[in-house]
Image 1 (cartoon, one colour):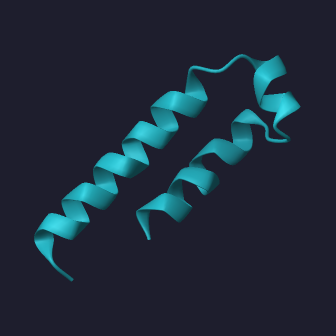
Image 2: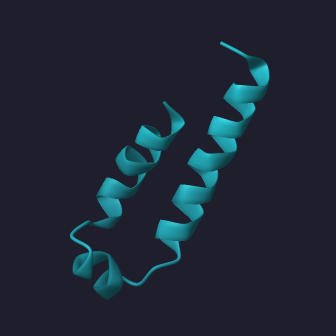
Length: 47
């Protein structure tokens, strides 16, 4: 895999974790996820 693509995917992974982590528990509940789900959802963006 291309190193630039890996770096971009990792940045996307970290950004997703940061953005979802900044939401309140109520906001996360409104979109149907929990804090436990954040890393799994971010991992999907890393693939």
